[in-house]
Each structure stands twice: as C-alpha cells, then as structure tokens.
Length: 189
Image 1: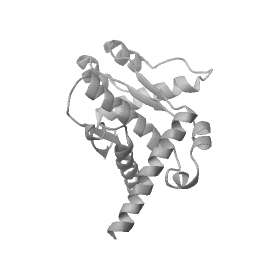
Image 2: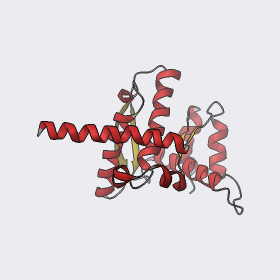
Image 3: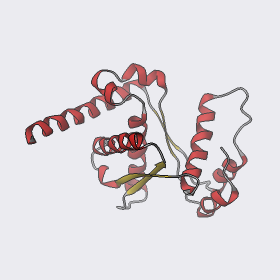
Image 4: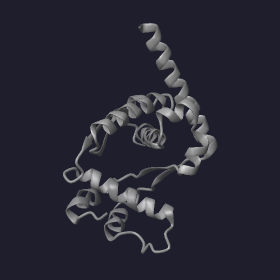
C-alpha cells in the first residue's frame, strides 16, 4: 500500500497525528470467544474496534480534555457487512468503559480513493501489520510511512495487543450487554 505525497502532506503538516492500533491474533480470539458470543461475533472486529474506541476516547477526555465526539470512517463494504459493522460499532459504543460512550458519534463508510484520512489509516495499519508478522522478506517501512511518522514526533502509537485474559473479560461484558438487550426487547414487546 502506497500513499502519494498529496495524500500524506496534510497529515505531515498538522504534526498532530495520533495512532491507536488494536492487535488481536486469531489464536487468542479462537480460544477466548465461544458460545453465543461467537455466533454473533465470528471475527475479532468488535474487540479491536472496542479497544480503539476506548483508547481514543481516553485520549480525548484525559489528554486533550475535549468534549467533542469522534466520528469513525471506514472503507466501503457491501451493504450486509456495513450493517454488521454498524451493529458491532453500536454494541462496542455501549460496552466501552464507563464515561467514554459519549465520545463516539457514529460510523460511516467511504471510498478510500476519495477519503485521504482512510488512505493514511490504511498505510499505518498495513505497516503495523507487516511489523507484527515479522516477515523475513520485509524490507522495512515504506518511505511514505517514514515521512508520516517523522513529521509527527510527539505522536507515540497507542498499541492495544489483546491478552487472552483481557479478551475473556471483555467478552463477558459484551455478552452481558447482548443479554440485557434481548431481555429489554422481550419486555417491551
């Protein structure tokens, strides 16, 4: 994945880029998520977006001391996938740590060819993914990524690698939220 200079230029000029990355290996996910929760969340997405929401909300609240909310933009998907992601986003929004839910507005989908922030996010995500895989043939970070990171020296990536015990705890919280939703629906008819 390459990003043209025109795409990254606004981010290098702003000097205010902040990376929030969540890492969840399939092996940990497969061991920690099972039962009814696994039927609903058949991939790690809900957990990774929940971690990113929590960490970015904490940053907005504690570091920047702002009350604005965060609007999430994701790559265009099929209607079915977008619907599933929107549902999972709203569930994660209700499941994040107390006091942070108000920091998240909504999620929408855009074509990354026309949405430069998505291109930059993809560049960062793919570089992080390559480092996590530790490929022997990897030749290191792309030039555009190096430029982006060197232009924002104050930005230290916030990495949230899931540990199995933490994922089990989070899974229990999400499952409790889902159960409460079903009970509420049953009571309200």
